[in-house]
Length: 157
Image 1 (cartoon, rainbow, N blue to C red):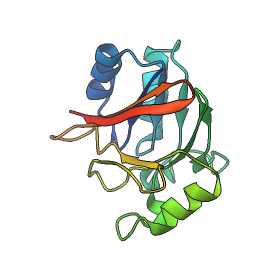
Image 2 (cartoon, rainbow, N blue to C red; image 1 turned 90 degrees about the vertical axis):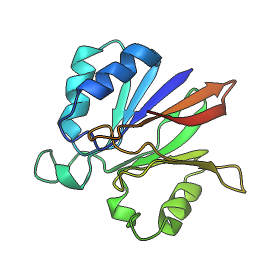
Image 3 (cartoon, one colour; image 1 turned 90 degrees about the horizontal axis):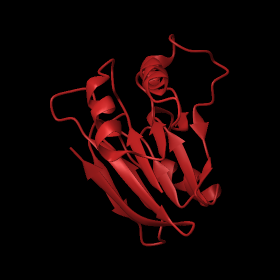
């Protein structure tokens, strides 16, 4: 199973659309800034399941009832999804990693910083920021799931 991870699109749909067409994911995750971009992408590819959370730029764009943190189980893998601003990821990742660990997540996904990051922690949890898909150095993330486990995670440009 292939999961496409997007963040910080800021009304730039073309790169996201290109990623879907090229990578042919089974699931799409959008980590906020701008929530409406995820909705537009889902309209273009309604057959692909999508999970998304709003970011700090979405505070006045979407309902306060929309969850800022999701912990879906996809292909047998528990994933902690958030934009990152609630965990102050521009300063540190400790509270983000701790919150994800408390849910039993095997991967923690965040955005907000616009800086790609993909690594596996010593306890086996993966942490990824796919970067931004809305500016000059556009990037996204790919998670490959096999037999209920993360087989690979990587940044694409």
